[in-house]
Amino acid sequence: MAVNGEFDFGENGGIHLHARSAQAPAEPFLKGFWRGKFEGSFDGDSQIEKKFEKDAKVNATGALTFVHAEVHDVPTLNRIAALTHHAQFEHLHLDELRGRYQWSGSKLEVNELRVEQKNLFRIEGFAIEKESIEGKLRVGATADVLSAIPGAREKVFTESRDGYLWTSMNLSGPLHHPHEDLHGRLVAAAEEQFAKGFLAPIFKPGKIVLEMLKALYPE
Image 1: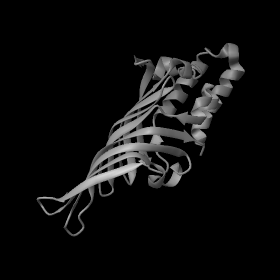
Image 2: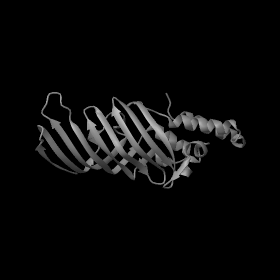
Image 3: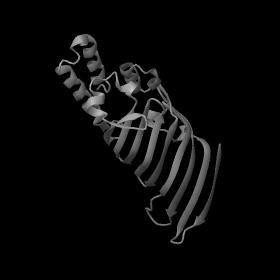
């Protein structure tokens, strides 16, 4: 790991720090839910400013690119693995995880976010966190992943690009328990397929799939 930087005194009174890191471990920065579930190291380039004024906030902007990132032991991902018959979801080895950020006091904004495990899924978009989180994302998945979810390709993931089928996802709510609108749309699409009798020849398996889909986020 290498961390270096340079600082100077700003024209308006304050400190300006330009920090660069290479192969920095993510673990010291993790808190709450993600401790023990995320492993990785990153390269970063950040600009940090702090004025010499009472109650002045620290402002920071920069970019992070993870050169190694793994996600594991997440119950919802384990359920997705069982639903889609893709065990890779149980222990993700991300090929890409990067984004640009802007932090001011208690507000964190992430832009140009990209998360991908090739031949499985990709996520693009941005998110803002200030006590709660708000995000607008594009979620892409391979046709093979979606084939296990009735109606997903016909009603939800309807755009084709870069080897994935895409849909939107809005994220909102408290950071420890955010809400998203994709799950409900997938359940509705599956129920519509089920109601129309498309799953009638495989009634029992179809019902099991619907129950598994509804249980992705248990109370």
